[in-house]
Image (tube, rainbow, N blue to C red):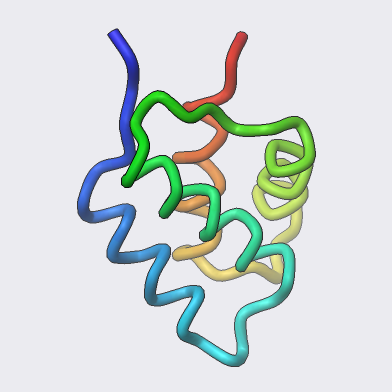
Length: 78
């Protein structure tokens, strides 16, 4: 069974992408989450997984960014 991104996560991703204060790293992860909401078969690339890991390990990122990072990492192929 393929995983997909929940509508709640897609809405959060859109919020991050619309925010001019969001970092490039957060926007990269948000774009991946939004793509996965439109195409559930898509998985997270290594580049996006690295960005998501950076977000989760850096206390300066918002809770929204960390939620998106966790979501895209859950879509990563094992």
